[in-house]
Length: 461
Image (cartoon, rainbow, N blue to C red; front, side):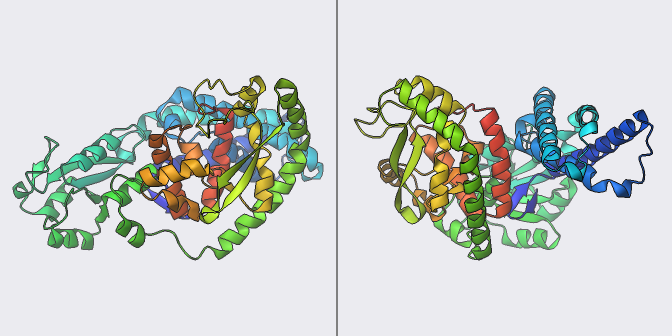
């Protein structure tokens, strides 16, 4: 994987994305040439239209990222990828038509949009047909050797067997007889020269998956491998990189302290984040005010009670604040205390089901963003009662409050709706990854991916 602004991106995904962008530029130029030929116009030199060509291609490319074209499911299923491509290109073309309406003098090729759409679908589908058999092949995967043969090693083997995995485990070395869980693991004593063994297998990375490191680490061998250019990684760091979450089963305070992340040099990023929150929340409030007003009336007509729901939540550094949403439940929904929403929850009103599915009930939270209690991106704020219980049951849960809560977040786009302690634990792993690796780039990725969550709200309740 390559680390871009502290966020890990698989090499295959990055190469595929850059290839797609190049093909979109080609499709845009072909559309221009075809339209010029139809009206018998000299297309002129490319230097005179490179800005709209690259600009329009980039917008469609962002739409592709937003709807999940580069997600794990799209990479292993051509049918899934094709459906997402059609949605992404359609959204991109609609966005381009809107931009051309707002900026008519910029000549954003309104007359060629249909041709650009057709060519884009053609070249990108052909691209997927040609590359589909190679994306999951070992040629695109890093060759990893695992030191260890216990439960951690077994988890790495399971992870490597996923079609979207970016690595292949080529060997397991059992450092002791007591930890051997994998039958295929080779005893350490059977390998005379670990350095030569790694070289023969073409290993590019060694992962330490030992249950107990004391007196088990072959330090001299690891040092020799390191000086030969083989990357040495511990289990927790490897899992963070490959899964986009902090593995709570194996992480410990010392790893959090000494690992990269939680940088103090966030002053500029935090200031930029706050400026974006203010500008975007003002714009969104103005834009969505009619929608909020219409559904506020519908909520009032649908059931007794106020149109808006105010509830205390835990914010930055554990400070409480009041969250405002459109009411989607009956007014007596929490008469026995706060509870997680269930599947087919009987407390949800008729209009509540609709506004929850489309995330319309979340729109008033923009006011909390403008006030500074929340951000657009961050861990979801929880009810104080839940937080008190979860902090007792889940280690490091309070660390998620070290960043400002958000309307959308890394956990929201990577994990479906959760309504249990185990779900909260899984979501915390993503929240800790976000808190540890936060950059404006990661916020941008999350905002784009939120489009996918809105269009395909599988986890909405």
